[in-house]
Length: 224
Image (tube, rainbow, N blue to C red):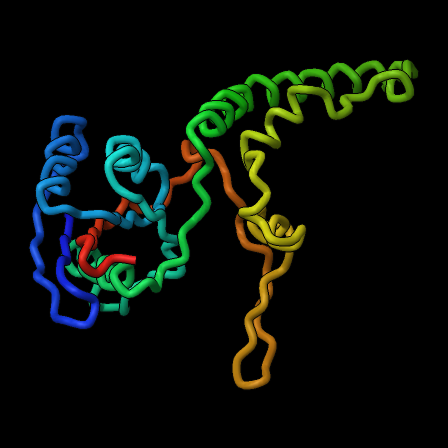
């Protein structure tokens, strides 16, 4: 579901909603419609990996803003695809969405390659640990001569996740927070509530959260 809002930010916008499938042909139809309407900004909710086909098709035509579902959550009991898309467009139109980090195309390709290596690497490590335990049971110690270290593959994995432009992370603390390595801060009425460590970025193939609720667009007369 796509909701298009056009008009000046201080005026009541023109609202138009259309339904598009997630096929390449349908997304290309969406792209042409947005071009005809002079749409400059699009916001997509980052649930699972469902946003990626939309982003890949629209990336070179409009500015795509990836929104964290936690930050743009709609009122409970009022959630439908149509309402969610209009709510996202409203937030985008008034500059109330903090964009999620999307690395450049070459870094995304590197990330995809390093994540594809994950399963065989994990399987290999599991097998090495099994053999190491068997050898240690036979009083053969390999721990002093074998180590993994940080090689070029590990460095590529790190770059694939965070890229090379550190301006996205003003401080080391921001990077640690993005990676899910520090406690949250949730205080209300002077009471410190749960500050559990949130889940950091993972392989989208492992993310079984609900599909994307909708795409929202803001026309160039009132977008931010």
